[in-house]
Length: 391
Image (cartoon, rainbow, N blue to C red; front, side):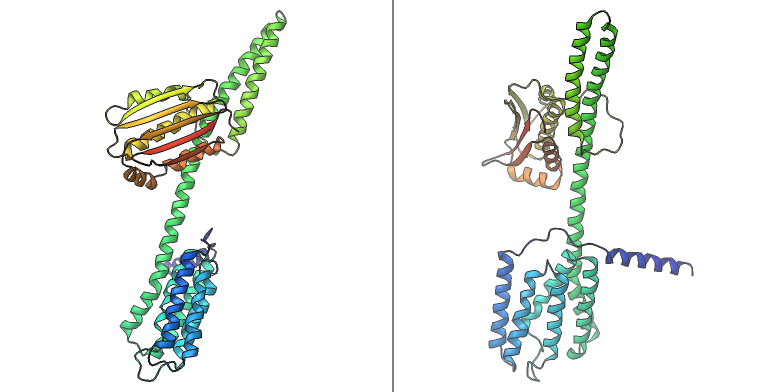
């Protein structure tokens, strides 16, 4: 007996959670496909109301059959209102004597458009909209059943047909929300990795400041010039540390102990080519001035090259060569990774994963840009541009 109160609490909490569920973010605006759909359905309803045999109240059928189709235009922005108007109209039309007594149906075929609305209700509406909207659908269906003298199997089949679009909308919404959460997790992990790398560089600068401060204090009495030089070094290191700390603002981490191993940089990209044996062959071509990069940018270029090469090896089918070009320009560093594999295979593989998302997040955090896409012929190209002194 004690299980029933517990089950009631679970059901109550589930209903409350559903009732408080917010609306889906950023529903698509009304586009030309929506207008085309409405135009086709309104035309079909008008032709049916005017030309279909057996209709006795053609003007009423035209008004109640065609005008409510316009609710499809705001099914995403106001799904509950659209469902209420459409299903209320469907109930009214079913109750009116539009047809003669011997006709095989008492409603218009065009009213089948109402099946599109439960999908939009569960896909874009809030939890309150979903509960109230499904109630409207079921009440309307229950009121129509006695008019149609349907059997039990027909009632069950009709209810299932009405609720199937709603279930499909809920499924699509759940997958979209899960996708957004997964992308957020990828961005969070990338921010944590960037924060660890910045932590290491800042720790290096602070250690240098401490050493120079100790040296300056030791020689201050006997060698004032040496103390001044130590202060100059401290000033330079403090300025670089401040720049790194500004980059860390907004970067999140979960308190992991930092990896004390030296961070890889542009100079280590050629090692990726030596470690990548077999096919495809990795070729690295550094050009320009690549010295004097800030540690964060230096490490980011390496990470972006590493991820791009890994993606190409995994996804570029029948690729024979991966070209990695690192160009040091006066105000930025440009990384280009290009393969000669089949673009369709590589593109499909990259859409399933989150490598591009993490790479874009890393480049954006450092004030740069990243673009990835198929080439005109074969292959895939990733291009990243990072400022030499990140913002």
